[in-house]
Image (cartoon, rainbow over all chains, first blue to last red; front, side):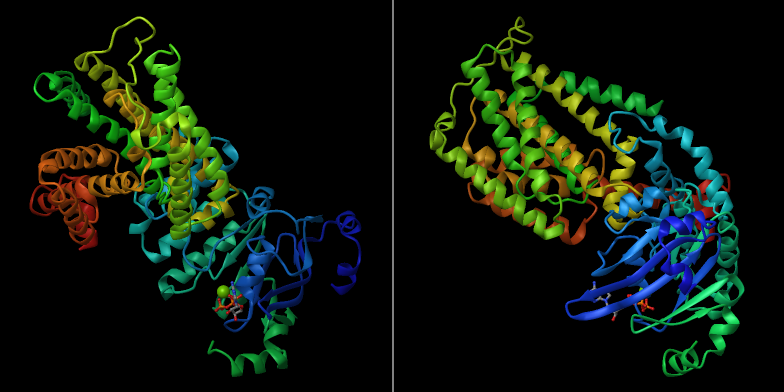
Length: 265
Length: 326
Ligand SMILES: Nc1ncnc2c1ncn2[C@@H]1O[C@H](COP(=O)(O)OP(=O)(O)OP(=O)(O)O)[C@@H](O)[C@H]1O
Ligand SMILES: [Mg+2]
């Protein structure tokens, strides 16, 4: 992995397009406090990759940096071999790197279908058509309903997002994110705050959604991580503590110490 | 079908109204209906609190008045030109302020409007403290005489109907859907590959232009334009109308504007009491009726529907949801 990180992105692509997303020396300083320090991350194309670590480790900050919600203090980000360090969030999203949020991020006053349709409009090109009636976006309804069905929300199509249960809101977010046909999906704690009964459907949902694309997710629920993820990167104090598959990481003495002294898992 | 019927009734009432009520009051209400619609587009559907909307209203009043006084431009084009001028001003100010949100945006727009007020106070063409007097109503389309208040009422009605339609169209357009999404969750919209600042800027320009048309109409109704039209109390009044009618509701601005104008008219004889009563209404609405007139009405209707569904037939689709919730 270190060897491949050292070669130029161009060669990397030529060599079989290994890593769809790469961060090199990613650093973010908030007024003197480094929330993320020199993180190197390589996400393999088609994999489900987890970012774990105790509270405050810098996982969300990493996401914010990767999707350009925050400007890195230092470091570079390569998406499909292209340096996206200077792009804006919306441009990154249009290229196919789309995130969800740790706090539920739906549009509460819009119905489930409208939520998805907003995302579909992004590439449909009607987002500024203020002189047309909603018939102009009717062609998107079929695709929107299909996505809702895929996440088990077919019955809630016309329900305002505010009235959906927590688990359904998170499912709606995934449907909205999928509407952009992202090549890489970044999910920030998709199962956080869920009851047991909701965790499994969401896990299945992510597994299905990951077919044909790459997923990077932050997750505290280790059973989800162990069943879902191909590779795990452990962050602590803004730095990479360990990396590997579940067995490797969970037996790493440094990780064990970090988690013993950290939150209960 | 009942909607069409309702529309037909409203149209008939609007056409007959000047024979029963004082036409200038009716025209004033319509000017403020358009103004409140423009404001609701921003606050209700975009989530932007502009605390200086009077600059577009008052500014356009001067532009329309100036054009009518100095050129032979027909009245409807002069009003349109006032709207266009306000739209240009809106584009400029929107471009400079769109990065700001919440109270910061409110304060910056207030500052801009105070600056513009000062410009109008000093500029020679506005007539300063005296205002711009004797604005003529040039012939409609250059041919139809509209000097009488009764005929002019129908011109104002037509422009108002057009503006309300535009407002409806924007809110129920593909863009309107995205706009509501920005209001609900701006970072999420950005993460979906759209540009919220640009989206809000478009709404700001449309809103400013519509406020300008309202101001231009008012200048032609009263046949004068004054500094008051561009002053902060007018900015405050339109906020009051919008909140009173119901934020983010389609017909809220119509009710809000009508209630406030009629109340002002009625209370005009009581001097200071007009202001006091406005303050009291404002407080009552904020504390007890947050959804405003139209919003509370809709909530009440939903409540009734739910109740009858619970007691009544199982046929109503609402029955299932009510049960599921309960
Ligand atoms: N905008 C900000 N300004 C200042 N400090 C910040 C900011 N955002 C995050 N931090 C700090 O950076 C550190 C990392 O935060 P981050 O949200 O990335 O952690 P996390 O790993 O996602 O934690 P959690 O598991 O609780 O979500 C924290 O100490 C946090 O207080
Ligand atoms: Mg976090």
